[in-house]
Length: 121
Image 1 (cartoon, one colour):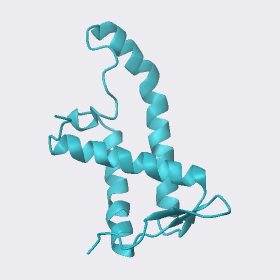
Image 2 (image 1 turned 90 degrees about the vertical axis):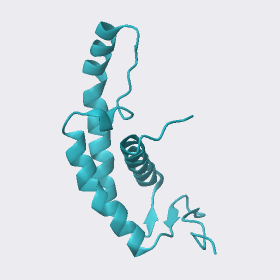
Image 3 (image 1 turned 90 degrees about the horizontal axis):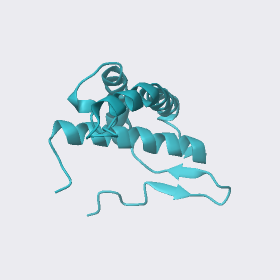
Image 4 (image 1 turned 180 degrees about the horizontal axis):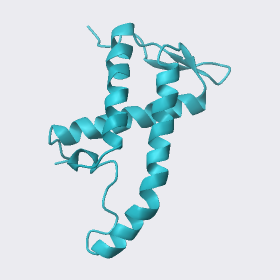
């Protein structure tokens, strides 16, 4: 039996997207959003994949990069989390909303992967 009996996201003729995920899945993801927001407000190794080192061989240059990019990246993550919280029960999303859902789900994936020490090898 398939985990998803139908496609979880289906593009509609009007350019919007039908979200075919059940209430249990929505509750699970929704419950993680506040935890992700809290995690983003701090520091720590769980955030390494969300804010990767840009210049591994040049700590000073990397620090400058992080100083310039971390703020905008955080704002983007917070906006995506807020959008997902506001639309978690929606059956239809526009392209912008779906993009922010995907950004948030990807951030959750990266944090969980880091916590579980999952790597690409």
